[in-house]
Image (cartoon, rainbow, N blue to C red):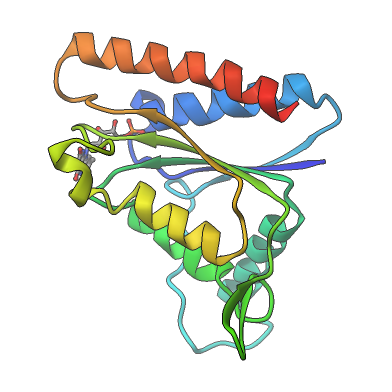
Length: 194
Ligand SMILES: Cc1cc2nc3c(=O)[nH]c(=O)nc-3n(C[C@H](O)[C@H](O)[C@H](O)COP(=O)(O)O)c2cc1C
């Protein structure tokens, strides 16, 4: 059993998504004691942008292959994904560009696109300063969760959950409340996954 744990917030120890992704991973460890965890900090060690250049010996190509293999062998993928400018941090986008590989995570056939990486659970620790939940006026501006759902769905992964803390920059009280609710939802999610 493998967990791939990824963080992308640039805020280091002040980051809420890092706190939540660590809590999700800790819960998964509790319910699956034999699990092996691979950790990637995309802010501390950003991946190079994808380019068409490079041969197998190129360090960027080698790292891109390692990133893809880590993803393919993971049973659980836990991602700390803050909203940056209505979408995700560019470091996380650079990771997605390494994982979206035709013939490995998806392919195009006579019936269109087909995901090849099903059978995993993806749990996203989603944080945002404002409110974007379905049914609110901000919902149409959510290119963060909607985008991640699309990407992992494209890879054939239906089991995608969001552990969400939003409205974090509205007020200290809202932040406290959102964090408590997010932590409470992690406990429930871990029990379901066990
Ligand atoms: C560069 C940057 C862009 C941001 N853009 C948005 C945004 O578009 N909408 C929003 O609600 N919050 C935005 N925020 C606020 C963050 O989503 C919020 O502070 C969240 O807690 C960040 O997650 P973290 O604590 O894990 O870093 C932005 C923050 C940063 C640093």
